[in-house]
Amino acid sequence: MKKIFFLFLTLLIFSCQPVEKFDSVVFDNKQLPGFDVSASSIEIKEIFEKNFSDPYIGNTLEVDPSERIINWVNDNFKSIGNENILVVSILDASLSQTEVENTEAKKFDEKTNYKYEIFYLIEFNLFNDSRDLIATTLVETSRSTTSGLYISIDEKENIINDLIYQNLKDLSSESNILLKKHMSEFIL
Image (cartoon, rainbow, N blue to C red; front, side, top):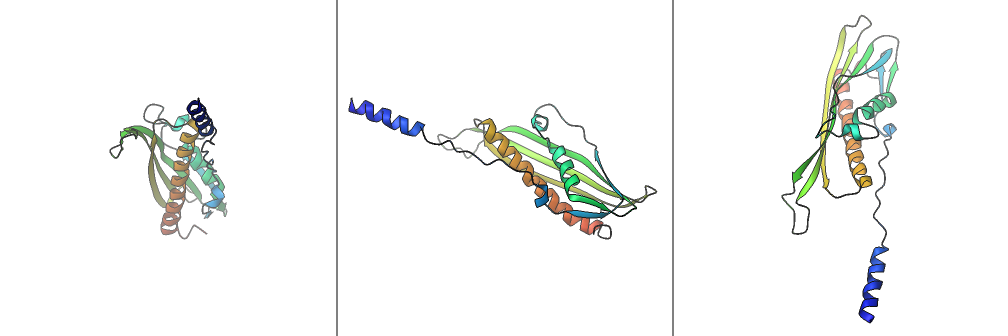
């Protein structure tokens, strides 16, 4: 009887342990570098066609990866001046999920994991008022991460959102470098 009571008490204690909760990822574009562009306007164009089939999962998110880029441009790029037009073309903003074999799995680890990959390709073109191209640069970033197959929806969303945010930080940093290199006289 004591053994059963002890077993019941042990199960009760372990079942009452708090569930590990991950902090939600906050997309704060103000933490990323800002750009003052010598232009009268900034246009954003989505050139790529979104994929709605496997392995692409960007369309399943509340805010897809291309919308994150649009929000970043709207929040971090300011047009200063009354001539020139900056055109930001989103050539690719894809997020994919594939199953991969876990080659380093130990005895009780999952043999298969999910691999999430995000890829951004953006073109910055600066035109004068006659629509002649004055300066251009292409920015490309990618990241990937893995997770187990059997995780909660909340944990999966946090993993994906963190991946997107980290790649957005990479995009912002790379854009900063390349815009200063190729459009230095137009970036204030």
